[in-house]
Amino acid sequence: MFSLRILLAGLMAAIIVSCQQDSPLQPDKTAENIDAYVENLQYNSEQLLNVQPTGESSQERSVQAADTTTESGNTQSVTCIRTTYDLKQNFDDIAILRPLAGIIWPGALVKGNASLMDGLPEPISLPRAPMTFTVDLPGIGEAGVKSIASPSNSTVQAAIDSALEWWNANAYQEGYVNPSSSSYRLATSYSSQQMALDVGLNVSWATGDVAAQFSYTSNEQKKVMMAAYKQAFYSIDMDTPESPSSVFDPSVSLEQVKAVMDGDAPPAYISSVVYGRIIMFRMETTLSVTSSELESSFRYAAGYSVDITLEARYKKILQNSTIEVVTLGGNAAVASEAVSARNAGDLEKIIKGDNAVYSRSNPGVPIAYTVRYLKDHALARLGYTTEYTATVCQSTKTADIFDVTIKSFKAIKDCDSIGEGDFEIWVTISAGNKKFHKSSISAKSGQSISLNWDHSFVANLKEGNYIKVTFTCKEWDKDVLGNRFGDSRMNKKSGSIRHEFRNSVWTNLGNGTKTITLNPGHNACSTSLTYTIKKR
Image 1: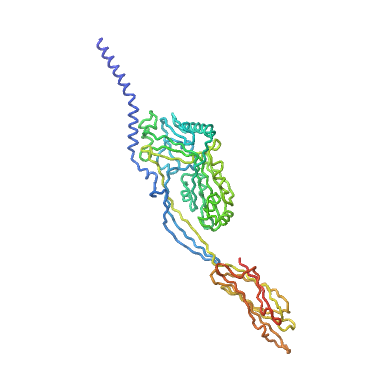
Image 2 (image 1 turned 60 degrees about the vertical axis):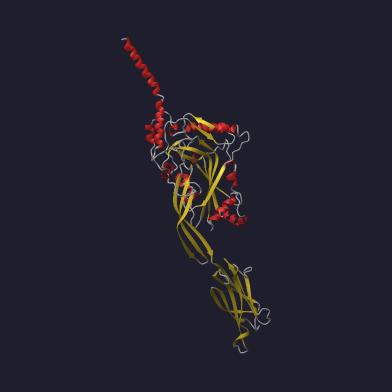
């Protein structure tokens, strides 16, 4: 009996020792299984996220088709070139253009699938292991390194607030200043997605009021340009996980992991979040301008160096443009207002003012984030394509419209000085097409007769082309028997004035009033014709 008791006691002790040895190994075994599962997931991140073949550049634009049309009017011809482009763009980070509170925070776990493409990642909600992040602010030092025992949106945000408040109360007081690191891109808009991609944003990431900002596009009547500034105040970076399992609490099982991630939805994490602000300027004009002129005019107003010899042109474009500034604030809220810019640097205070510097009262908001895969920490790059058609029209002036008014006829001196002279006059206006007038007029010496014959016509802008006004006059006299005869001194006397198109200008227009005098200075017989010529 005693031996049996000893045997049972020995067995119990062995069981207890065995349990004490096996329990610590169980979490390690689970971690190994999780690591093996994640590391053996089969997926192609470039296919999942539509990465485009753009070579060493992040963007590639290629021409798919082009056609040219020309329409001629009375005074100008308009040539339009319609070019269809295929635009490919890859992104290393994602701008926050929609409400994402609670989803995007440094260290958050998300699915590295197509949900990233829409700017709305799917969160992975499994209990977390402790993690560490670093706030990138000058002078913050160790106060910017925070370890979070149980990472979540709320606990991480509280730690961020603590780090920022330390900087505000200490580093800032010691003279550290943190102006934003600003980058900008601008482009003429031909489609909403094209404009968004060209300024480093994406319509797919936006909703509501933000998406509406990209709906303004150029056409044959107006040009639309947008400039987007990403002003980064600071970034917060998560320490790279040692292994896939190291991000999960030890209580997480392999079955829980398998339930939320696989090759179609591989696990990823928010490795970095940038805080600051995004401001966009939208500029529209109905002037006939090139994309280069419109964009240079904006740069001029924003205070950048431009070709100063074109300053007058830039000012004219600005005076005939509307500009709206759109600021993306907290949780992707939109604030927009019209602004005025007429001179160099008028927009600079908006771009580089107090709101471009981090402070306690201007802490910035999340504006972009970077995603990496948990399997191998590879960067999640996102690719987008769009096809759009750009219509660029150039008008060329081909002719001017002139208004010619034959104002008056004057009998400076009647040829026979007996009674009223009987005059017969011809007026011919030559300018591609001819206008002809013939009239009989009776006038005494020194008398002016108002005529006011109005003509409008088109004169082509061709070197050597001319406008010619010809005045011809004949006077009829009577002999002693009352018989009419043409006075030889004014027998179809003729004179003309010629206005020629030379070196791109019309000559001899003067103040617009001209007089043709026949037999000038002739004491016996002289007449004149006065006309006005005005270019519309």
